[in-house]
Structures are given as structure tokens and as C-alpha cells.
Length: 314
Image (cartoon, rainbow, N blue to C red; front, side, top):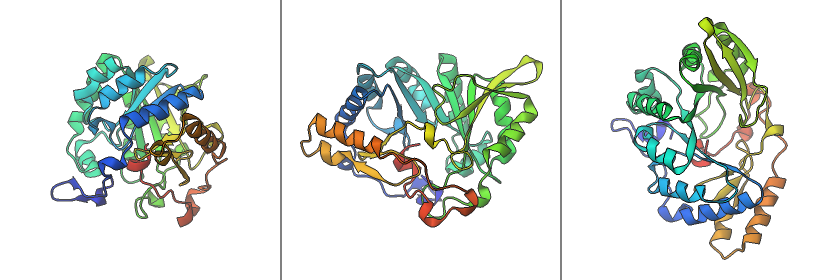
């Protein structure tokens, strides 16, 4: 959650929290997953917020892994609890993880997140790597905050089996949470990474999601992989096949559009599987052709995505 939603002296988050009954139960989530898999979905990502703080999450993942037709369960995490959960996650069927990490400096990490947990995250990454997880690092690019570290992140991909993916800073959340002065287009980030070596596009983009992925060939025959996610400067809307289901049961077809479908109401008022399937299909059919953030220099207030990432899901 944003730093302005915490009590600064104690670093305790003070933003609005959902009551337990407002959250979808694991049984309700399982039902939605089962139905979407019957429509052809074969991959799911658990995100948040931080998914590892929810009680019973590993048992929930185990039940998901038993759904016929669901080929892959992935997890996005801030990495703080990764060391504690890595073995259980791997055994439950999660072999791909994304770790959100915007800096490699402990002091800057504390400033960005409000917590002095960098060493804990790094230990979790090391352990997960040793166990054989496929790891992607998600780096939100912010001018004046971590633009001096892009080359270091690129070097990280040459030293470790991590895919490093740079994400353009998006106008998501509260009014003051996005400043265009901090925006850096993906092409500028790429120019910095090219100082490390040659970038060659992946031949097969399957599984890369919205990222434009490249092989990085550095010095002394070192190789790595970096990617650029550019929802503002280079739209990928025509290639997006994602749906987001929030923890309170709202189905969202586009991250940057605030239109949502209330599945929780259907789940809790006796709707049939067919009713829910029809609603999911209609949400997909209504998926927008593109978002309205055409130019990062002209983002209007009405074009901003109002829901915070901690609620929508990254």
C-alpha cells in the first residue's frame, strides 16, 4: 500500500482494509477458477497485495493444482515471506514466481517500502533460485528514484538466472500517487541496458505476457534476459488476454479501465454455473480495445485508473 497510508513512526499501514466477509472465500475462488478453466483458461497468477499473508494460502494453491486443465499456477510476491514459503510453494505446484523489487539498495528499499526488509527479500530470492524456481524480477521504473540502478539490474540478469523486467510507471491509484515527472519510457530504459551488450528479441513470446523480452549478451560470454513492459509508450492491448479477479470478487478485463463485473453477488445469491459462465463470457466480450492513456504527457484526471494496485492485483 502507498506510504501515505501508513503511520510513519510505526510503519503500520492505516489504509482501509476489507472485512473478512467482504473477501471471496477460497471455495468461491475455486469455483470461479474451475469455471474459467472450463472456458479454456490454463494459467493463473496469484497476486495482490501480498498473497502470502493470507492464512491457508498454500493449502488453497494445492486445491487449485488439482483442477483438471489448469496447467500452471504462478505467484507474484514482494519476496518478504518467500524464504519461509519457498519449499511449500514448490511442493504445491508453484514453480514460477515474480518478485517485485524496485531497488537493490537496502536504504532505498526501506524508503520505498517503509520496511527494512531488503536482506530478507534477497535471501528468499537466493533460496528460491537454488530450489529451481523460474524467477522474474519486476522493476517499476521511476525517474529520480531508481533510474540510476537500471544498469545494475541488467547486470543482475547476467549473474543470476533471473529475468529482469522493467515496467513503465503507470497512473494507477490515488490522485497523487503518479507524477509524470517520474515517468520514463521503455525506450529510454532500453538504451541504458544496451550499454551492457547486445539485445536480441525472443523468437517465441509465448508465456512472456505483456513484456517484450530480449536475450542480453554481455561481456565474457555472459548471457541474461531482460524485458520491457510499456503500457503507456507502446500499447499491448491487442495482445492482452488477461482477466483480473479482485479479492472481493470483481472481475476486471483491463487493468487501466475501472469497469468491473460483480461476481461475488452471483456467487452468493444462488447463481448457477451457467449464469456465472455467461457473465464471464460477456466480460471478455466487453474487454476494451485499448485504454485511453495515449500520451504520458497528456494524462487527464478522467483517464487515470482509480483502483489501487493493492486492490486490483498486479
